[in-house]
Length: 327
Image 1 (cartoon, rainbow, N blue to C red):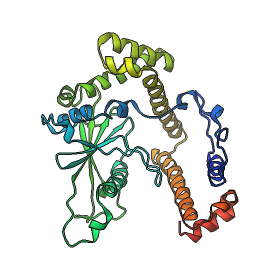
Image 2: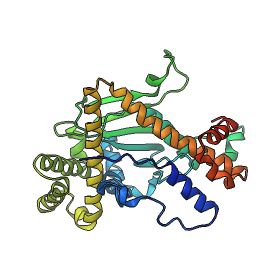
Image 3: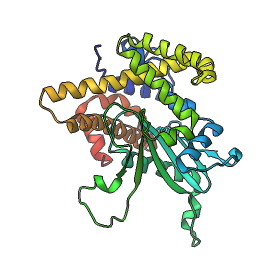
Image 4: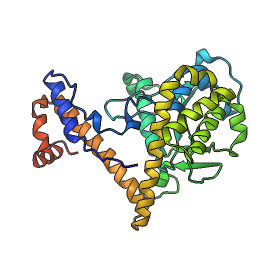
């Protein structure tokens, strides 16, 4: 499969210009240039499965080995799409005085503590009124808990931890800030007690395994469709797949397509003698560039400079604006 690398900078600027000038944005995005797997992308199957309180409580109970049933006491706090930093986490909730942030990953990512630091900061801004921060009385907050459910093809231990302090350029014995993420490997044969405790999670693993197995001999779309049909016949996520069939198929194609694309890129880079870290660095660089642009636009909006958006296509002017706002 060939993957087109699309430069969205100009499209992004054009959309911002349309918004500033109250002009329609229909037709601005290059929809025909997008791969099939990316069209109509809205969510992930994992998020769809655990977006409701009852399902999320079952996951909480499995992780914590508890048997809570008071689902009405749970508050869903998932970041649907925080515009300012462009962040979107999988699922999160406040329950039993804990702020639980759950992520699903199909690739190994040691940067999850840093991502979760950003997530939890956003969450606490939503949960704690700003005026309380200036009072003499201590502000009590729910205890943060960070969990990643991993089902990628790269072998990792059944359970491992990533710490924010592992990313510090200057290691310290007792860092003043740290954050620990627990990674559960949910591939077949791993963390079976956890999977038995959460039926939805177990069946999700079975569904994704069927796709991978089918993919060995079938085209991606055929593999996903057959996995859905077989799961329905076998009672695996049956109601969910019947009700959400079209969206699940679209999401599964997108997720698997992205996973395979990253593997291809890594393999090609190894053949060229490049370290995997360079790939991750390039990806992170793209994300940093997008966030930097968003911050610049925020500054320009605050200072009534949106009429200058078109001029950002000039690299020299763009750099001047970055310098102006110390970005």
